[in-house]
Amino acid sequence: MKVSEINSKKVAILMKIDDINQANERWKKDTEQLRRNGVIK
Image (tube, rainbow, N blue to C red; front, side, top):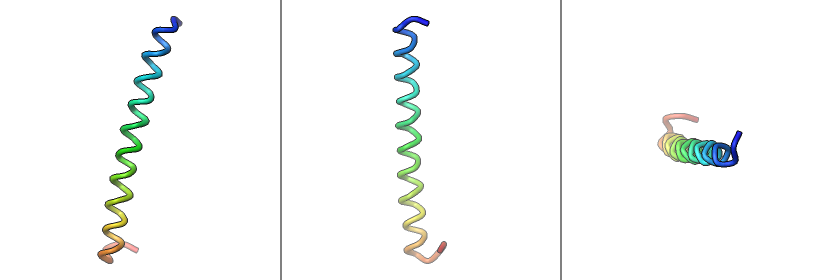
């Protein structure tokens, strides 16, 4: 595999990780809000 191919795959993976982290932050905020409102424990 060429270095350029590896780097492009690395960038794609880092972007996916960033997307997952953003979704995780939204999930945490949503669940915290539901807990505060007494919807979930």
